[in-house]
Amino acid sequence: MKNGFGVFYAVVIALGLSWAGFVVAPAVQLGTAKRTTVLVTGDNWPLQRTGAATLGEQVYRANGCVACHTMQIRQDGVACEVTLAKPGKTPEVVSNLLATLKLSGLTKEEADATIEKISTAGGKAETHVIPTGADITRGWGVRKSVAADYLYDAPLQLGTLRVGPDLANLGGRMADANWHLVHLYAPGVVKGSAMPSYKFLFEVRKVGSAPSSDALNLPKEFAPADGYEVVPKPEAKQLVAYLLSRHADVPLYEAPFTPATKP
Image (cartoon, rainbow, N blue to C red):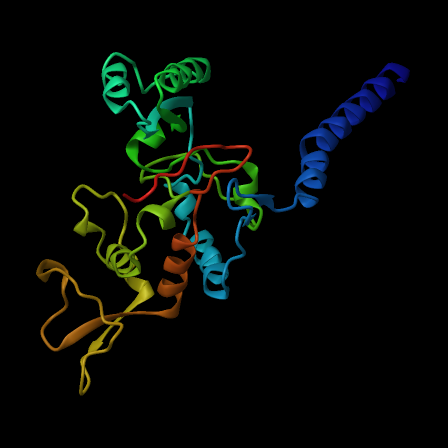
């Protein structure tokens, strides 16, 4: 009997410590998390969502979208790329030197050494930090996802299966709300899409005296019968607002990169 009580208490203590370590501690840590700072600009990150996007998060959850999509961009590492900022007073010498140097796929030490050589030749160069990994190559994001990106997510919906693409930076790479509405109604607009249609988020109705400004511009094979139009319900607009609020495209201390600049 005494041994039985000892085992019981040992199990209770072990479970209690496990619960404290895996549930309580992370909850306390995340509960006190604050917005971080964007590198270079000093802006706060992340941005608070609008009311429509906040409601759309519940639509996303209610329809089980997390079952087929993740919201976590993965990154293997970073590579450095050296670019010429100014050729200096000896542009021909610098140009000849550049032709002999490896300028991309460098480690930080290699990039520093390359910049020193260019500087010695009279030019000025810069190092660009470029995240690497399969998700980056696919165009799903420009950097890895970090804890700060999920500060306003409740509940957190990271997902575990990628039947469809990752959505962590969807608002940064596909910002056309009308496209997303059409895709929700008729996923077949994307060849090979496995996503089911969410037609119940839309209303098919007769065209009134004039077509609705919200009516979808559908390809002929997905369009309703003549005289009818497809109009998104509020839930469809809220869901799209939430999808477009998903961003992971600014450099942070935890996930640095050099943003691309427009020519």
